[in-house]
Image (cartoon, rainbow, N blue to C red):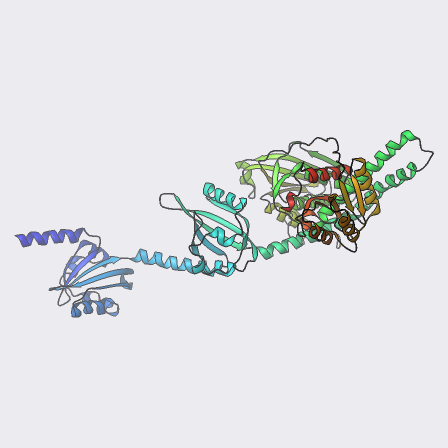
Length: 625
């Protein structure tokens, strides 16, 4: 009775387990199998009991089952192994134990696990084959996974990078952009953007980075999957392409610029000659002086805008007042385009701000305006408008590139020849043009599309043959406080400080000397760097500030600054140039350069810059930090 009860308990246990189980006697005959074994072997007990395992499953003789079972019985040891059995299309994990009666076998179906392992191996192979750098980092920045693409890109092998902090390994310093990327991926589950990084050998590269937040089974964030694509060379080529296209646009404006500069210079020359004539009444002279000043300002603004556009220096994305940028374009178009083209503008007073590169967006608007001008060879109307737009879900569904949110929409429309639907489909293709040979490269609108997309925006085109064209550029708006308008204040007076003015242009030296002396400064002048050094050595204890032109013969501004710093490391300097930008100046010695003045500048600009440097009344030189 006890034995019977014990056997019953054992059978109940065997019938309830999830493993398949069968027992073989010493003749290899089935003496028992549980319900799970019937399912896995796809045979009933009636079909198997009393039959030998090798008769019933003759194919198994050619697999691990046969030698492993014999090994367990002959050596009286337990064996464990895994085997795929094609007749049943199943992977088995087998545990066989010898007994006095024969052999006891436990086995499981591990097909799903094997498929998952194979899938993981396949995915791992794909991750290593891809040229992208793929890594996984935890929320603290520690690297958990590093593929061969990452090793090829950065130079760090997996064993060198695993467990290291990604921020310390791949970045020179933690930046606000990285903090914003982490915040975005945690809130939205993903982030995409461009990031500057460094390789093992210290080389700086630019990557297109895609971050995806990884969650556990409870939907809690655990890590971040990062896929980085090296776009360093692509960006360099793109910059060359944009610069070349920008110079092409300048070429198309050349005749208009020449015409307008002549119109600006004519009243200056005429008024200057009249001022020297005794016959001119005294009460008319202020009016002539105002004409000279206004014309000179107009010419300076035009040259500065054209020079900034032609220089082709792309900067970082910053918060931009789009109204200011559109007004600059309006001025260039108004002053340089043929007079037979009627020009209108409609620019909202309260345009939102955007995050962007001012030079590139300048190029977008210039290209659109030039195209509109060329579409009206016999005259017409060009309209430039800018307004705030809210894109809703309905509109976004109709335009694949649009996203729900706030945009600044800038539209250039013309009443020219227009385009057919077939042409509109191709206008953004590089080198596609409808202009005559030699009249255009076909890069203008391709450049516009590239720049607008890089700013997260999109384009909208409407055109019909003989009815004109309208192209709108939508740029995502950002939240930012408007910069308050600065009111003009009285020009600051000096306190008798001695200023050394260094410039190779005699007219500029004398004008600066007159302006400074009129506002209570003492002035020394030098026509080159060598003379400036000699004067500074003589008056070192008195000179409070040096105004240095960067472009001079014999000794240029950068060399002059270095020499002055050796004489007095605390010397205060304002750098001046009509060609060198403050970005270029930042590459030269700059510890003593506390402000930069771009020619042409007004007496007010000069006096305020000197006052700010001498008395610290303004934030000068931030660009040099």
